[in-house]
Length: 213
Image (cartoon, rainbow, N blue to C red; front, side, top):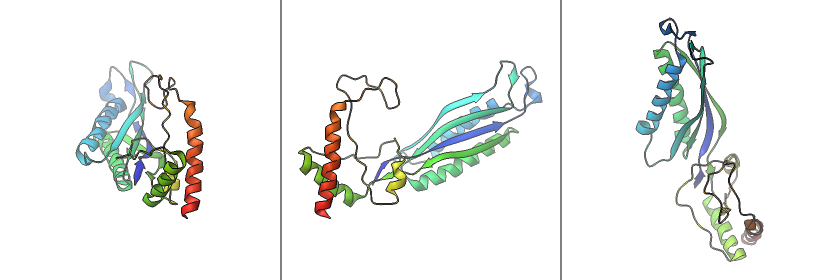
């Protein structure tokens, strides 16, 4: 089934009206609008999605302004939306756009919402996975572990997994004494001793699939 989340960047540009910081009533503050939008989007997760369905909406970039005494014309937000359901992904995209535009309009601003670099969920074909796991265990003498739920990471391999029967396998590579950090961290250390096992995993999977098919 679903192994990894879909992912897509959410880019939001809020346009208000610039003014001097001493005369805020003469402009429309996009920073204020941005704050309300940010909070409103978190309510989508709290009130419009099932707590049993993994959904992540996080904003990694919030930018706006150049000086302490100037209300800027625009502000920019950039985040990521991750879901385990394609239906949920499409529904939330619609809701995010509606909330951003409606909130901005309520304050006299506008919001331009764009969904960038969309990538679908990673889907494992159950029959193919059974075949390859059997082949892996026979070829390496090691036991394969089954995930009991999707993880919130993503991979553009997901596009392929919805086009042809696919199996997405992961190889643990945490070095024994490495610092406990997450992916994309400059201090992460991988255990290169797993590379031969990775080669064996591919070879046994191919060999076993050919034997069974």
